[in-house]
Image (cartoon, rainbow, N blue to C red):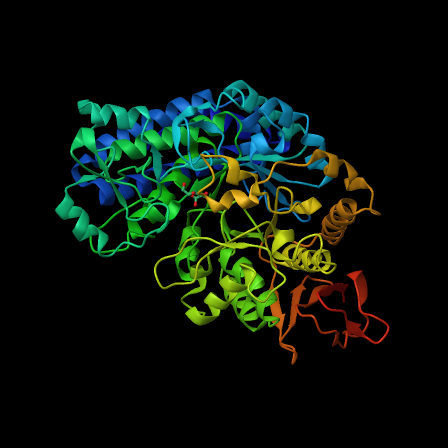
Amino acid sequence: MPLPLNLQSAHDISQDILTLGERAKGVVNKKSAAASNEDMLMRELKEILNILYADQADACFDALKSRMDAALKARPLDLKKRDAQRKDDPLWFARSGRPAYCAYIDRFAGTLKETCERVSYLKSLNVGLFHPLPLLMPREGDSDGGFAVMDYREVDPRLGTMDDLRLLAKELRDADMSLVLDVVCNHTAREHQWAQKQLAGDPEFQDFYLFKSEQEVREWEEALIDVFPDTAPGSFTYVEEAKSYVWTTFYPFQWDLNYGNPRVLVEMSDVLFYLANAGCEGFRLDSATFLWKIKGTSCRNLDQTHLIMRAWRIMLSLVAPSVFLLAEAIESLDAVLPFYGKAEKAECQLAYNNNVMTALWGAMADQDATVARSVIREAARKPAHGAWLNYIRCHDDIIWQALSASVAQEKLQNWSDFYAGKDSFAKGLAFQAPKGLAASSCGMALSLCGGRADALALQRLKMLTAILFALDGVPMIYMGDEIGLENDESFLSDPLLKDELRWLHRPHMDWEKAQKSADASCFEGDLSQFIHSLCHILQDLKLSARGLSQEIIDHEEKQILWLRRACSSFSFQMIANMSAQATKINLPNESKRLLGGLDDQGCLAPWSFVWLQT
Ligand code: GLC
């Protein structure tokens, strides 16, 4: 059976890392095993395309094959070596005590070059994955924080060039970190050349986007749920030049791509290959939920969307095998779990653990960990071939509705009110939500914990962070939370941003404060050094970030969240008191305190925690 692709160069690399002894014993077998694996993957890809594209499947397959071939040939040798090293470790990025760090480049460092100068700062936080929010060429003006891309092969000129991006990727690699990039795969800016060509009637670009008549819009919209009901109601936007409506799940300038057209899949796959070859080691698949549309459905998480995820996994496995996929699907757990795919048909290796994040904030509001306990238990249904990306804040709002399948709307409403400051210590704001449902919440972590002026806020934030790092998975730090930056209201005076509340929690990095992060006697240093300790403890324990058994221990006091993770020779335990009442705790026998602790009366103080090794 001939190889479906010109993959010889990949073989050469894997052969390079075999010892002479290994070569003598088994290289031929390994080579043929690899060949048949590639063959199987290509066959599976073909089957997927048959399901998605029927009589256009063969042409799509051939086009993809030639793009893959070209990408494989162009893949730089140092990246091929990484692929080879990680061949048997698909979860290589889930490393004990090595968090992810997420930031906007302009707000973090200014430019990509200046970000290179901040790599040492990331290193001081033990960061393993660096995820800059979208940095590819956005449209001019409002671009939804860069999520309206005009060109996937150019960097936003205000941030630098593709060469700067390659350089940053390399500097990160040299510092034992990996670059994760957003691929905004569901939509482009209306100014993208694909959109412009479709509008101009270029036959090559027909059907890249979805245009509908007024009547069709009415029919489709019956089953759709608005994402931005206040600032961008509906899912379609009238386009004068086309005299019809284009599909826009998000803002009117973000045009949804039509994955029903195989050429869209080919072009977006090529974008993935191009960015992988520029040194990107993981992709955040933005708005992955929405890729495929079928009338009468909510057009979220459809089977065809999962086939596309699988197709991307297959293609990357052949072109850039070590590159992982992160699903951005802020949905119920039942909708998120399928993004991992099946063990033998993996899709994404990482997904946002949004349900647990949301439930933790809910627990703080209620001073009751009951919901959080069950949500954490449920999240353990994640398959072993994937890992969770755990977080407490990100650049988006906290979407309470993601828990609506398991938590009553009334409770979600209470949480939403709480974080908008109603009868609470929290200093957040309510963001939009579908009619009659609890609005999402915006705010930086410290502000939601009460803000700097609240003497207990730091304690609350440390407690949440201690829970975050104890959970099974990769913890993510959102820029500024490590030094307790608060809400930034400056967006209100920017005409482009003032109507988008999420800018409340997208501050500029305060480097003066960050400079104090080594000094544990000040506020910033206290928090930063605390995170440092969490990382180092995890690293010393070699506590796996990839599916070590995790159980929740029930405690009679509802405010207690007690987590145990069992290793072969010891167990790691985290006990948090998510309330304002000191709570008596009977520690397990022979436990060694790692961090945090009980007071002299054997109580866990309000909003505090203890990490134990038993
Ligand atoms: C994702 C991003 C969000 C953006 C949306 C549309 O959810 O995280 O910030 O608004 O996609 O691209």
